[in-house]
Image 1: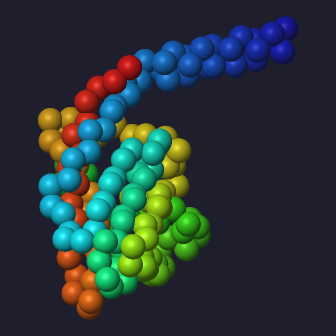
Image 2: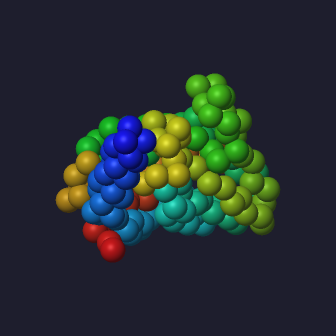
Amino acid sequence: MKNRIVSVIVLGIMSVGLSAVGGCATYKANVTNTRTVPGVEVQVAEAGGSFWAVIAKNNTNDVVKLVWDESTYVATTGESDRLLRGKTRLIHSGQAQPTSPIAPGSELREYCVRESAAEHAQFAGAPGDINKPARIILVFEIGGRKVMHESSVQFTKGK
């Protein structure tokens, strides 16, 4: 009898949990470049969960560096958060990140996540204000000078 009651409680909890998950809204991100860097082609795209894919092609004659510690995700609520490159282990997330050098005529392909979402990055969170865009700001260093690339992310409800 005791095992039967426990089984019923567990099944009840599981069905409530599943219905809650099934009822969650999903969001699609539409990314557009709003500020570009001369000589560097940048593409930012949703990569699942809270991850973003970054492709940066260096069309200059100089080595270009992507400065991760100065690159940020700005949420729809205006909250600014440092970006962590995909190769950063969670245990090292509080430490300085090395820059990613991009040789002339080559491209960098990397994943990144906002620092506050790193622990649960496989899950996509809901935007705080769907009516406002988020922003992804990538800082590049070219010839000792820092320049910003900015992408605007507009979220829409998906299925």
